[in-house]
Amino acid sequence: MTTAASPHTMNTYGRLPVAMSHGKGLRVWDTNGKCYLDALAGIAVNTLGHGHPKLVPALQDQVAKMIHCCNYYHVPDQENLAAKLVEKSGLTNVFFCSTGLEANEAAIKLARKFGHDKGIDKPVIVVYEKSFHGRSIATLSATGNEKIQQGFGPLVEGFLRVPLNDIDALKKATEGNPNVVAVFFETIQGEGGINPMRWDYLRQVRELCDQRDWLMMIDEVQCGMGRTGKWFAHQWAGIQPDVMPLAKGLGSGVPIGAVVAGPKAAHIFQPGNHGTTFGGNPLAMRAGVETLRIMQAEGLLDNAARVGQHLHDRLHQALGSVPGFREIRGQGLMIGIELDRPCGPLMGQALEAGLLLSVTADNVIRLLPALIMTEAQADEVVALLVPLVKHFLQHTPKA
Image (cartoon, rainbow, N blue to C red; front, top):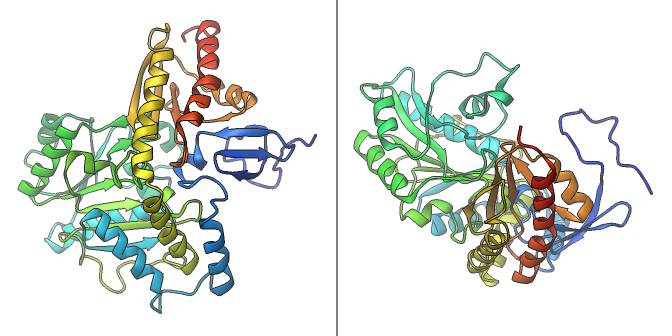
């Protein structure tokens, strides 16, 4: 029995005392051979689970051919993947990078240049309470979480914060401000506690952006790529953004990011305005192309919607009347279970029980499993999780 430790790595994560070795489908094993059911998918990254039999040989093939070149040259699978993302989104073109943070950073730069091109010297971007867009200085400034901002001031100026799902608050906050250039939000806030934007609100924001010539920028890093049962979560509202950052599930575990732009934003960046060393590398692009192909071939959007609804219903059935349970939020296989008290210890307790999950926003249990999850595996999650939640609520007093 080996004890997990990482003494030479920076202490930036409150890690659980386990080291993972390998995985297959929705199962992972630690270095001591213990098996777990993975309901987290590397925080919404492993779209196809672990070791997918169609993805692995494709990536092995690509590694043998070429892992990286640079963007001095055309990369064929960049165009292949971009064309697929344009088709799925109805937008115009794509910039590739390597992470969600980079995609959001690029979106912020697009919005600022959009403003400067209109003669606005100090562009302002509307952002939201409880949002999360990354941990660079600019994306941290856009993020609505003071706790993770502490110690990193001065933050970047040019952001105006509003509450979720309140069109009047958005209108009031921006009234008479000629410097506003964009509205930037997650369709479903992930780190903030699985907080969805209402579909009617999304339509109202789209209308306002059109009226005032603002960019509508939707961060789909965590909620996109089929997780809710549509390619992108905003599609449930029948709208299109002007800018859409993607990452996480797009590469099924291979680091990748993308910014998909509609007509209003497609030509803001010109040569020299933005760039990246690793973005669009052949390995990441092949991972993206194969992920989309497999998702389509295996009907994973429908699966995410169906199994997600099944999981939601079973959890609500089991927990709905339990004292201390508040509500279940989310869509498809992006589920948050809110309790009436902080529940961080449940991560470790679930680990001991053989279940991988996350706790976010202090009191929300977050489930983000691979989109290949079956109803039987969803039932297994319920069977493992519900007793833990009931025991926790019975034995942990409210703060």
